[in-house]
Picture 1: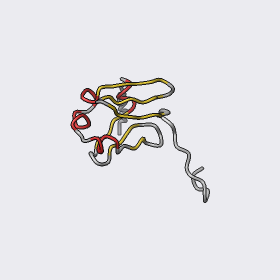
Picture 2: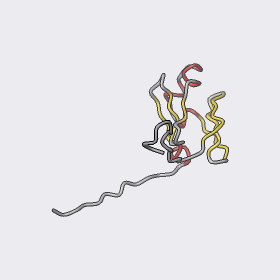
Picture 3: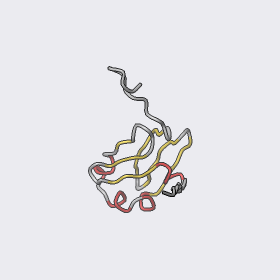
Picture 4: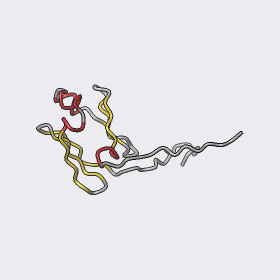
Length: 95
């Protein structure tokens, strides 16, 4: 609850992301209960070329929106891994 001392604000979950690992050039994770595997070279050439230490130093966002590699300043969205495209809806208002 926001505004209540001692209580963390509740985060709107985009996805439940678990068991993230990188082994032999493959990114593996479980998203919303479904196992996903992607070749690093197809996901991110930067990650594919990174050292093992850089590849293993990631953080999953609390909302499940994406994965961040601080040593590389690289981000991958979970929606992107799942092939979910978003469009921007522009609303124009006349003056």
